[in-house]
Length: 77
Length: 263
View 1: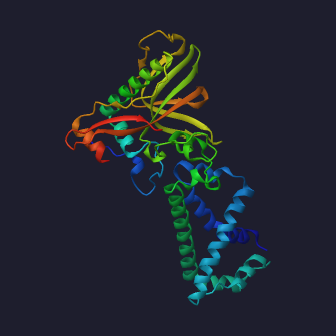
View 2 (view 1 turned 90 degrees about the vertical axis):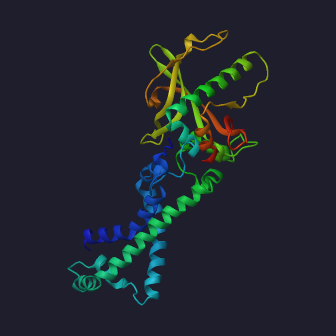
View 3 (view 1 turned 45 degrees about the vertical axis):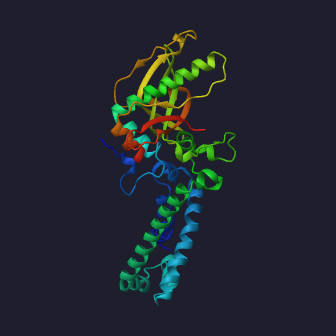
C-alpha cells in the first residue's frame, strides 16, 4: 500500500516536493486520492454555496473516508 | 602563446566554479545554471574558482607540494614548445590529478551542501538574495507565503504544513472556457523560465458557460486516467488551494483524518 514518490529516493532527491510526504502518499494511491478529492470538492462546493448566499463563510474541516489502516498510516507519516 | 593550451588552462582553472554551480542549481532550479549570459556566467564562476584554488593551493603548500606558478606562466606565454613545463607536468602528473580531484570534490560538496542548507532552512524564500529564479516553484509549493513582500501571511500555520495542493485551471478552448480541477502532481518549466506544462491528477472538467448560480450541483465530467497535462499556453488563470491534513480524533485505534485550508 505504501508508495514512496521518486522525489524521496536517491542522491538527487528533491528538497522541495510539491506536496508533503503525506500528500505524496495519498495522491499516489488511486483509492485514497479519489476519496480525498471527493471530499475536497464537497467542501469547496459547500463553501461556494455559503458565500453565494451572502453569508460570511469559512471553509470547514472535512473528514475523509480513508480506511482505518490508511488513516493510521497517514497519521504516522 | 598557444591558444589551445591557454584555453585548456583557463577552462581547468574555472572548472571548480562550474562544478560548484552545477551542484547548487539542481532539480527544480537546474534551469538557472544555463540561463545566464556568458559574462554573468564567467563572473559567477570565477569568484568561487579563485576561492577554491586559494583554499586547496594553500593546503598543497601546507603539505610541502606548492603550486609552481612558473610552469603555468610558461604554458600561457611560451611561443614555442615549453619543454620544461611539459616535463614538469609529466613528472608531477599524479600530484596534479590529486589536486584537481580534491578541488572538484570540494566544489561539488560545497555546491550540494549550500543548496541543502538554503532549502532546508527556507533561506531562499525568506531572503531575496538567496532566491532561485523559479517563481513558479514558490507559488506551486506555497512558499511565497514566506516572502517579505507578500501581503498574505499565514496567521496560524506554516508553509511546511502544506500537505497537498488543489488547483482550478481555466483553459481557453474553441468551444469556450473550461474549468479543470485536480491535485497538483508536477510541473515543467520552459527554456525562458516560464511555466511550460502543469500536471494534475483526479481531474474533472466543466464548461464555464454551463454555470448556473441557482444550480445545487455543478455538472462536471470526470477524466479517467493517471495524469492530465495542461500546456500553459492554453491556461487563462489558475486558482490554488493549499491544504493540510488534520487528525480529528486522537485515539490510536480509531483515528480519523480530515483536511483544511492552511491559514
